[in-house]
Image (tube, rainbow, N blue to C red):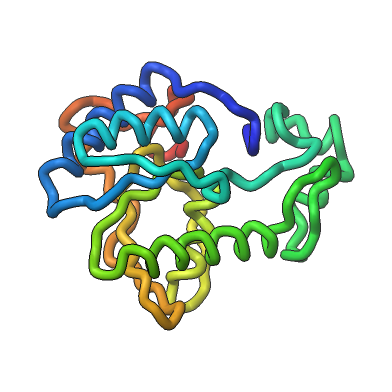
Length: 197
């Protein structure tokens, strides 16, 4: 569980970033690439921006802070830190994770306000956001008409959301990894497969 840990991008991630950068460079003009300041997202964004335009770093695009769970393997969290594990899996969206971790409500507020601000600044433009799984799942929930969540976010998947002035968001497409299939890089950055996000 990475959270705010500043883990570097691995070789599979670099290859995936190059492939998605190539794909995005062939689509309608992108005004700017926004990125989390954490190394794994920032390096991905740099690779994409080299093909698609400038880059802007926004700290609020970071992954959810996971408090005392950061650096642990999920399957071990219940044993190693039961209190933090319970907070993480709690259905209570206001439950903060011990050790400075964010609640889902706090993540949602940070996500929604950051993306709305970017959308308002770039009306009628196409921008790329490079962030993290928890943050992107929150985007989905915000844009979903029924407020439902998505379980997995595959690395370098292309998710298109329209952001409107009135705070309404709509999903145009989600989870598109077609750019990875022909290259053989349909795997997670951790060496998994298309189901391991």
